[in-house]
Image 1 (spheres, rainbow, N blue to C red):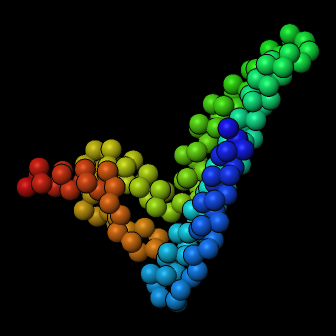
Image 2: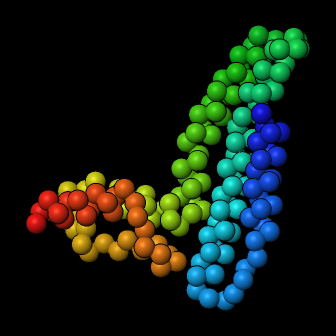
Length: 151
């Protein structure tokens, strides 16, 4: 599974790296920046996935091929493997928030939209990301629905 995943992600990275930065316009710069963020995010999520899943795969391999491991060590490795698997699931949103401007902005918009109106006025909130691109997220759609309901 991990070798197949690496091959697929390598193909994606090669394809992303092939596309050249065509001009110096604002749109091209924003596109290039988004592509760099995507590449960093892809590499980070893949690395975290491999680090977190590898111990479980190695343990499963040892059990399948009947490699002698004492019960205590096997139990210890199984608990570490399970914990790392859970950490992998929890790490993805953290990685996305740290490395992707659009995800970070959408996450912030969604959290702010959950606040009561007296604490948060949706009309005052800017829904543009760092690149100046207007975002269409669940939270902005919810905000517009709230405005229509109030009118």
